[in-house]
Each structure stands twice: as structure tokens, then as C-alpha cells.
Image 1: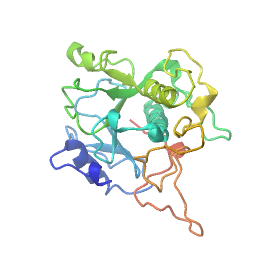
Image 2: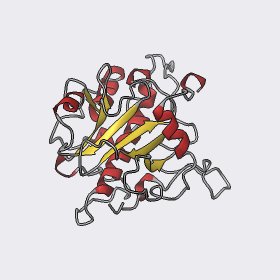
Image 3: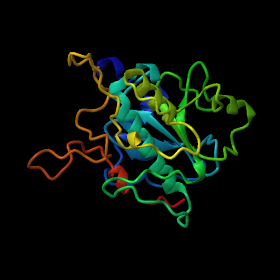
Length: 262
């Protein structure tokens, strides 16, 4: 989409561009020398680039940033048709954070059919967006949409950065998904409450993504998602008669992310 083309001088666009050269079918970029602040890409597909925040993490257990590959300016650029994109961010972040946990921590596989709910042990994982005019002053990018995902507690945050991650500015991805759904449907199930067992609707990433009138007229807006990506299950799209993915930029499917040794 030309309106969301890369922006010159944007740090996120630079990371996305450099990650386009990451070798496919690899869980991460090569190891970096001590003190390197180069983005350590953990995942790359047609819609997102996920990298570990190494220079200024908010948690010693792990802090990941998932950036839209398109230069999307804010969450207000999203429509109901982008609900599968948000669900994909949630699933990807959960799997990547789970991979950062010690190997002895039990993680329930989410590859069975029907898929089991992704696990967030003891609600350790925080996944969401910092909304303008607030920003993380250590990661001062405000006009290229990116989600933060980290393992609590945020022991490296500090009180000033904590404002950006507080309820004053923090928009949990579960709440954003629920709010968009509630704006276009009669579903009033809020997804972001603590200690809430995931509702069946959360197993349908596209729930609420279509809009229309009572006479059947479709009003759904175009999604920002790459048309070749299968967002709802995190798998690569295979063209008929082909054994390879449409995009060569995919790493392994989300459900097959290996454990990252840290």
C-alpha cells in the first residue's frame, strides 16, 4: 500500500528493511558480539518483523518488539478487517516469549487441532501498544506502529519509562481486539480481564472483522495484511501445485518456532 510506504529516516523501517535479508527457516539472526545494539531479528514474515530489544529492555527476562512491515502510523489506522493481524501479533508474541523462558518451564503446545489456547504462565506476558502522545523515551519511535511484548516483572523499566507502560498509555492487545469487536458486533465479551479463561471467540481470530448492513451489503474495509499470508493459523500459504511458500521472507511457521537458547 503506497500510503504506508517506507519512510526515510524511520528507525523501524530500517530494521524491517535489514530483516528482509534474514535467511529463511532460521529462528534468529546470527549471534552478535558483546555490546552490539544491532537488531536481533527473531521472526520475519510478510506482515511483521519481530526483534529482541537488547539496548534498553524493560525486563531482564525478555523484551520483544513486533513492528509492522508497512509504515503504519498508529493503531488508529487499523480497521475491523485487521483483527486477524492483531490476533496474529498476540499469538506470535506469546510463542516468542514462551521460547525465551527456561527450557524447564512447561509450555503447552498450540499446534493440535482444534488448537489449544496459547499459554501465558501466571500472566507473565504483557503484550500491547504504547499510545501517543506517550512513548518509551528509550525507544522513541511514535509514527511506525509496533507492539511491545515482555516477560514480567519489568525490573529494568524505571519509574519514568513506567509511565509509558502504565494504564495511562498502555493499550493491551487483548483490550484492543475486544474493543474493535465490540464496535462492529453485538459481542460484549471483554478479552483483557485478568485471570479470565480465554473465551471461545478468542479461538476465531477473524471474529468481528467483517461489517455489513441488514440487507447483506458488505461494508468491510481493506485489511493491511499481505494477501498471501494465512494469518489465522500462522502458517505459510502454499500455492496450488507448489511445495514452497509464496514468500521467501518467511521464517518457520509460528507454531514451529524452536526454543531460543539464551
